[in-house]
Image (cartoon, rainbow, N blue to C red; front, side):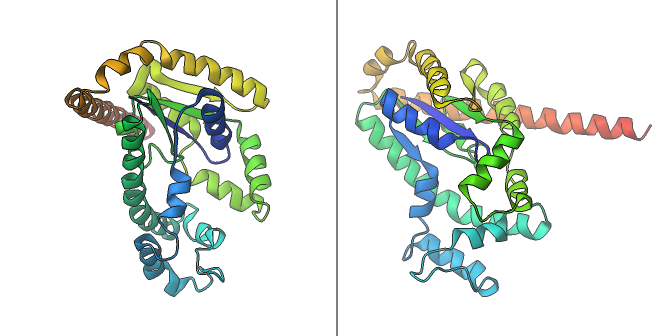
Length: 264
């Protein structure tokens, strides 16, 4: 089964892409945002862990019904100051393992159901290392001004400064596309979502057509052979890990060369 990672920066339109992949191409979607909300709902271990760390210093963290106030929590973790970075790391360490567990359950259900592909809708796909299990990736991008405009329309309470901090707290979609191409080569698709929904739908139609080539029929032959699937999955993880490691080494070497030249 082909696992497609769907990602991009905040407010680039991943939800619209996900909806089109589901409604027009009948692809099962595993939405990390929905899972992230579910694993921190009141009464869950995730909810309790967040309260233990954040509630003593954030008294307005809870809404009247006991759920987390996401706007308040967002103000605690978004930004580039050392304090916000540290808090964001704590939050990610709580949420990411829980979400990964639920995503693996969703992948298993899709496989048992005979789906030829499944979409992992994960905003922080690369940040969380979830690209390791993917066979390809689809990166959604828009221009910076449009991204800020959409974010402020989506969350009217945000100031322009707060919106900027949220954008800067995540990888840009351009960097995600760069890493995606390094790992997946031709199976990294970058979709421009700055136009109309009709234009986006046409671009996605071409992407799905490329994804299907050589997969739809072939998947039927390996569906009933779990050992083959396991071997393929292990090889995919090792390959993706190796290629990402090489990319990170190249980035470090490039930074070292820049620093060295600056000293001359």
